[in-house]
Length: 241
Image 1 (cartoon, rainbow, N blue to C red):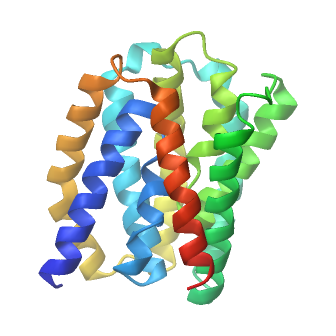
Image 2 (image 1 turned 90 degrees about the horizontal axis):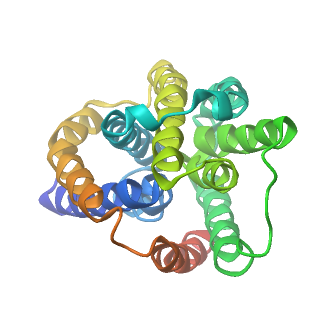
Image 3 (image 1 turned 120 degrees about the vertical axis):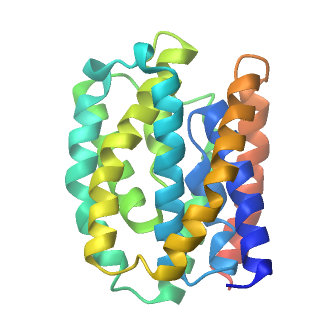
């Protein structure tokens, strides 16, 4: 493993964990817009999934008393069922195809967040929870980017910022059990991936600590616009790669 790969992965993981700690989500989209330039697609997804779930555990544990399972269980059950299958599917797809699909997903998520998220309100019904969980399961399994569909749903359900962030990351903790197991079963956890993950734990700890400090001080709406504006550019780059 070259120092270039480690330095790049460390910087991306640090930034991604800060964003996730502040916004409740964002590690997967941000990391998957950059990691495929450093690692083969399957390894990038595996590393993003491991690091993202580790960050989710840190955030969920810090706000465990705010977790509301009653509001999220339809999403979590649906997501767990679908994510395992799509992990298996992504392990058998061509890297170029997956990069193009990922680029399209990032562009769509960026456009939605920037231009439509303030106009469209998702009602917190059982049906919408299942739909959000299904979309999250598909995108989590394919791209390790399952956060945005769940975030859009929980924003309309949670009674406070703390409940939103903690419940969202508790969902990630449960869903990551399935995705991590399936990625292990499909053989995408290489020795290099695990070594890099171990080295990046410091970045995750530092980033989560920084994000927790600024969680109640930063305008999250502006932060999301910056992140998703960047994701549109990243999506275009990946789509044409």
